[in-house]
Image (cartoon, rainbow, N blue to C red; front, side, top):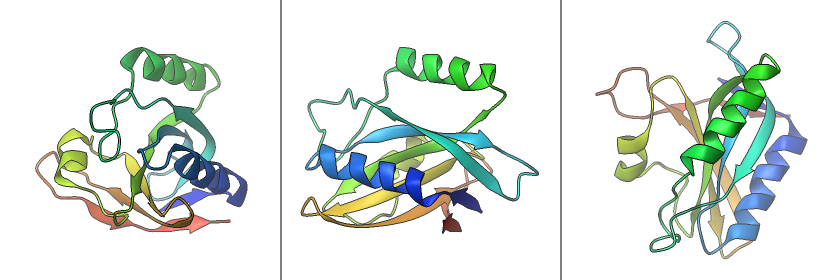
Length: 140
């Protein structure tokens, strides 16, 4: 399970709407806790470096990610996972998303239809060869 406050969730949604018709991406930071419930304390919007297929792919700048990782670690927080949007597509991970995913992280996907209507799901996996499984997403 992953918990996100309404304010932080709204930031993710607004990022997805602002980036439409391209994918947005960002980092989820907070506390892994016991591992059963992840609590998001911060979201960090990142630039999508993919310019050739920005409508259905995202690429995070490794230097920008490293900066965020160092910043959150200095404040005793963890990178819990990532978020990104799917413009005019369901909030389910693609094979591309799975191929680039890392075990134990959460992946919140925001579907953005027509630049306005949104819905979301969170996904995770624990073994490198395992498929994504839906993770309970609690907003509020």
